[in-house]
Image (cartoon, rainbow, N blue to C red; front, side):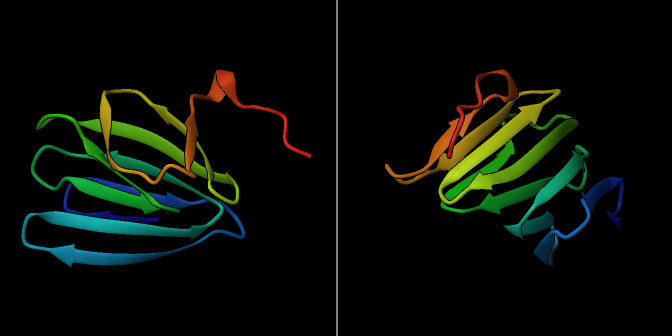
Length: 103
């Protein structure tokens, strides 16, 4: 668990990520596994996973669970609205309930 002001990033077991801290928050780059984010209004967190960039839609507290499910497939759950800033055509983002079966 890493605390950045009032924001928190927690990695699940066997996960890896990078962390870049700036004056207006932080950027978490998920390399593998799962990250749980709690982003505060004063210290917003942005997350990058595969080719997608996510951040709070407005200046609000946001909680998110982001998992690299498979290559170019993310599983994203949020408790407050988050927005996907950028994604490639080959990246699929599914809510937890809509996760497809991949063999």
